[in-house]
Length: 126
Image (tube, rainbow, N blue to C red; front, top):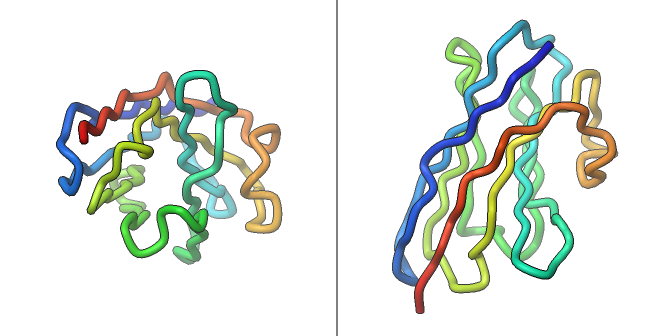
């Protein structure tokens, strides 16, 4: 069983930065795909970024490319999302998720992730 806990959310002005953390407990297999998703009020949960636990391969949605960076520390079982140049439209609840035996091909589908954190609120004021 895998448990995920997000932290690092908060209130920030447009143009500012935040770093989110996702701590995973339990044994994480090398083939696990870790993802970040977000959900704004009244909208569907959307893919933000993903990283392969084993080799560090990354994938980003177009709207965050060049601004967000996903990384991982395997020794700490922790995944990070560095968010720079934040915009008001980045506001939402951010969730981390784990997909054991996952592949980059299926990274965007929420149904491929059986493990989810509780979420952390990110609010960007303009």
